[in-house]
Length: 305
Image (cartoon, rainbow, N blue to C red; front, side, top):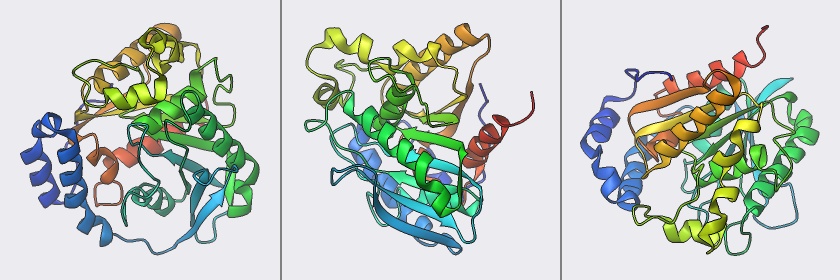
């Protein structure tokens, strides 16, 4: 596990994060809204020059099965970083406001990667394992087509946040889907829900059941943590100091299972001061440490043994 580090971030954001601190967990919807509002002016003022944006490219027939491509100008054989947003399975878009989540892909594009922002169908219309299936369809499209935008599909890192992390992990691990991350080179799970639960302490319990079903007896077999140990994909986990209830615990469980199977733990960061939303809002805000850790991990997957 990578220990806490002292991040370099705009001082007003540090003040905000430390002031909201554990209060975020008392009301995650209010904390999420406050966090987005705090980051918005910093993201709006952030550099974006030199990044070409292509919006709403279809990877499947459904209206939500689209993606945005953020490419550095003149990109050629660039590594690819794709991002899957959260939203508790029942809401969320690749752009939840004028800056988030495009900030994530803008940051990676500014570091020389092709960034891909993936949208997918929501629960109700597309219950388990359809979120993972959509991610798989998007990854297949990227594998086959990203060369046209200057990308190298042989160097392809998939990042999933929150429910998007669940879908990315289902695509990577779940034998019921049977895709096993076949089109990607590396996987990063950020604040991912790796275990389904409907516990009273889970403020998103109803949303979890909307996706995974009302029969909680099926939750174990449908949870990514159950199948992760069989995966051989290079893997990194990132959680916030102030997480949505139990997500950090479930990620630690996943890391433990993978460590027992591989003989060493995956890289695991707990980001000091951050909450579930600021973990992704911080990209391109002036704080680079988490992104640099991801790039270092990604590069290490291609380093000589």
